[in-house]
Image (tube, rainbow, N blue to C red; front, side, top):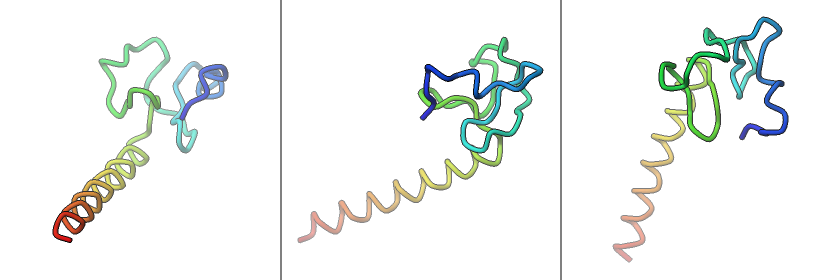
Amino acid sequence: MVDENNLEKYVSEDGFDLCVMCEIKTEYKTDIAIEERSFYVDGAGQLCPKCYSGAEDISREYDYLSKYLNSFYKIR
């Protein structure tokens, strides 16, 4: 998660947000509202498309595994 006391770490010298996972420059300047952005995650921050896609894949795998384990334990 992003350290709210150190947000400037996630801003490039020319005012663009950096991905909070890999720290590459994103296409969004800091003055663009988050509602107008793609790949923004509430509670985490701005992600680049690659990290956002990877996070979605992990989330889907977690959901699948969680459902599988819950159904397994219900059977027993």
